[in-house]
Length: 213
Length: 213
DNA sequence: GTCTATAGAAGGATAGAC
DNA sequence: GTCTATCCTTCTATAGAC
Image (cartoon, rainbow over all chains, first blue to last red; front, side, top):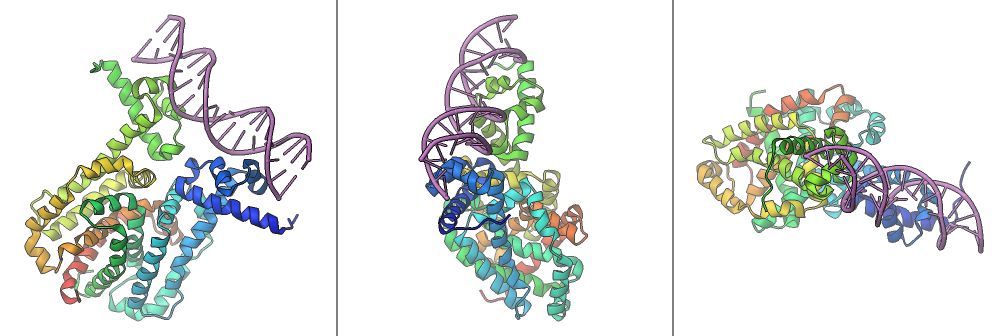
């Protein structure tokens, strides 16, 4: 049975969804209250159930949307005509900018996944990471050989690259506090990090030529 | 007014505390239930309040203990008579081993801090990070100059080093799933990472000599 | 110190009027 | 489609017996 959407449906459903995003990202699934979401959407609590049936289903809709938004930020890495080095610089610039605009998303997504891995499992299982790895090797085979990067080390390298951009946001509460303690501010730390991270990773890769494997 | 602890006090209080650690780390502050903690400690729910007055106070006790345990793992970096390179290798070996034994702690601590930064703020504020930085510069001044490491870049480098060991655990739910997808397992990934991370960071630092500053 | 019983409030969810 | 009223459950917390 297909539901026909009217204009007001759409408006209300969107208002609810947008409010839910804010509350869930801020408080997490367990800390969020349906009443908070209703208040923020300026509607009655029972309308939430009219549109989404339950808190769990509403959360699921929000989580799928946010997680998708977060993960699709990694896509350009696989479908761009750039050298490995250019891709790394591009990635840190774009990815750190994205997170700076949405600083709570990384922590929200990572935490809800840890709390309930099943929620992400279906998404991940449907993807073929082996194929992505093959694409990478196809696009950058020569560079990988030059840098002495074997397929075995790719997961280590990829997670390392991602660590360096995501961790500051996953640990923002503490890093921000420590930076303030030494008289720095988080925003300029992130701004600096775009270039620092790229330099750091590229240096490491380049000098792998000189290190024992 | 000082409370005198009897033997049974101690036993019960410990049983409660241990149970609370398990439940809070697993479910988080918002998801944890006093009833779960009581059940796991095999005592009555009202005893929780007898010993800790409120859920919030119980959580605070647990959080302080866990956060302390997590942070003190960084201390050896500052008070050991090793070269910078030896310290980096030592750090990854010890720190990754510690987290492998307590894989949920990083995510728990980071997340609860993000949700309520005030909880950690009083701990952090009481520490003097500028002094720690000065100690580092005193111990390793020659090496820092050799690697072209200015005081300005130290926060970037330190957070990068920590990122590489902590992030895999903060993002364990997803990394584990992806690794399984390509036929690897998380434990051996972590085992490999002890050496990989040290090599990676040391390579990057060494080749900073050849890169524009 | 430990238990039973229960207060008191809040949360998710539904029924039913409009 | 939106609201009011209310149900039912769950949760923290306390009172009071032993």
